[in-house]
Structure formats: C-alpha cells, structure tokens
Length: 267
Image 1 (tube, one colour):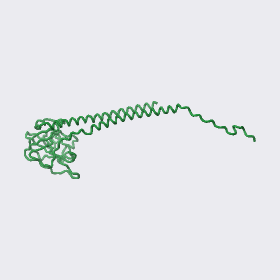
Image 2: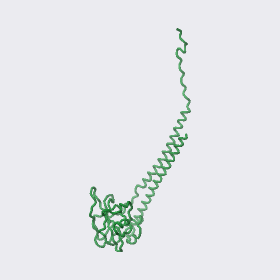
Image 3: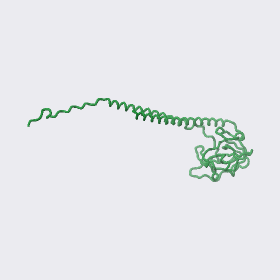
Image 4: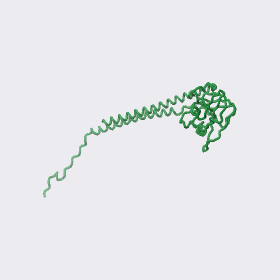
C-alpha cells in the first residue's frame, strides 16, 4: 500500500505542476488577446483622428501607443542614403520595402518607408531602386515604432537590412535620425507606382483565444487522467482483496484403487 500511496503522491505532484503550466500558458494567450484588442482599438482611433504635424508626434521615443497615427511633413529625400529592407511580408505577399531618409524643412531627419514591392518566386532582389521625387516634397504617412531584433538584422550590409531601427541606422548612415520612422501614404510630387504603401494590419484577434482554450483543455485532461489512474488502482486493489478472501476450492477425494478396496489378492 505504501508504494501505491507513493505513486499517487508523485503523480499528483506531476499533474499539479503540469496543470499549473498549462493554465499559465492559457492565461498568457488571453493576455496577448487583450493586447491585440487594445492595439486594434488604438489603431481604429488613430485612423479616425485628423492628420497631425510631424513635429507634434516625433518628440521622443515612438511607442506602440503612437503607431499608426497619421502625420504630415515637408522636406527633401536623401536619395544617396536609400536602403532596401528585405524579406518583408505585406497583404499575404513577400518582397522588400524601400527606406529613404527625409530631411524635413525644420532640419530633422526621419526614415520613410516609401512602400512595398513584391518579389516573384525565384527572382533575386533588385540592385537598383526607384528614385524618390526630387526637390521639396509634401507627404502624409503612418507613424511606426522602431523594429526590434538581432543587431545584425538592423545593421545595413550593401544597402540592405532586415529590420528598420533608426537608432541603429543613425550611426551606419551618418545621420542624426529621429526615433521611429514613417510609412508613406502619399507624397507630392508623386513617386513610382511600383511602390505599394504599407497600411495597418487587419483588425483581427488572431488565434490567441483558441490557443488559450487548448491549453486549458490540456490542464483538464491531465486532472481527469490522474483521477482515472487512481480509480483504476482502487478497482484493481478491490478485486485483488476479493480474490484473496474467497475460500480455497476443495479438491475431490481420490478414488481408492481396486486393490485398496478389496484387500490384497490371494496368490
């Protein structure tokens, strides 16, 4: 019995730890769902708000709460500082985006994502980029925060990067860039039609709720499994006791041999 209790105790501890982990993972997915809903609500509010001057928004570090506001700014593109952001995804397609610094009329320099270009399967990335409009331009765009990741992905190599981070690119480009960047909506004079503006992601809630339900289901399965294990052990012990309590079967008497019944035969 001691071994059985020990096994039950160890299994209970294991299931409790496993169930706790599953519940925490489910709660984590629910937290991510709340964050997604908050971002969707913030993006919707920014879409309804009027366009703001660049100088009112780009005053410090751009955060998630600042993203997807619309701003307007005037300045001159620095065509000799363009970068190609590779392996980008937009609207279910993969390709690249063209990043061009803009020196504003106030003297600040901000990175502008001028748009997305799809890369057909099997083709290499182009080495020549569409030139920006020359002279002073007036543009409207979305506020974007710096992308985070491996330093190598944010450091340009042969005018290409994977992630757009103005803090890292400032040193590489030799420019005093403001924090964050702008995703272009439209510009006057117009630019190449090849570049597709990068718009906010669809306001979906993602798979977080279904993932949370899966983790909670795993926790329930672990508890039910422990209950079934203990119930089966108890049932087996009960059956073993019943078998032990049964009287031993009486063996039938051995029939006497003819010689034993009638005595020894006379010679």
